[in-house]
Amino acid sequence: MEGEKNIREAYASLLHHDFEQALRWFERAVQEQPDNADYHHKLSISYARSGKLAKALKHAARACELNANAQEYRYHYGHLQALDLIRKAEKLMEREQAPKRAAWYLEQAKALDPLSVEAHLLLAVIRLREGDYPRAAAELDEALALEPHHETARRMKEDVMRQWTHQQQHRHQER
Image (cartoon, rainbow, N blue to C red):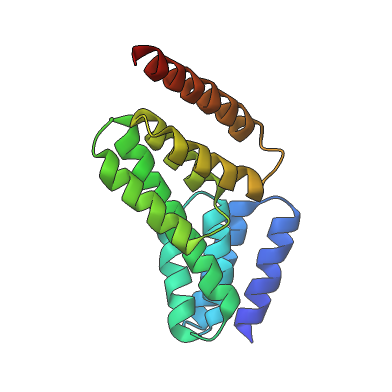
């Protein structure tokens, strides 16, 4: 039962806000019982909270391999996969490269984590850059449906609607 002792020590470290020590205790628990899905899951959560996405993904995947029926493990793994795709899309967007690939990553992220406001916001940015105001507005509507008081989404929606209205007026004047 050395694994359980390590888990208790990890939680004690968390209570003292010593996150690096908690990670070491969770790692020890996994070393003691490498086929314990729950230990991998707990370690994955701690890695994710510490910003160590690659390690979090590795242990989330292992937890799912060990217990494919655990819905909590699958949801956590999907959430981490979505975060990974969002980060990849952000890198492409920062360099203003491959907007179609970035949009594809974000669509995949939404499928993996339907509650990802961030994926909707970034897709709205891409759609706005493309001049596709209806789709940008739709993404922002989805973000606001998930998080009604999201200030950035609300401001973006106002900006999109203003730009869309301006575009429509300009087209009408050209006729």
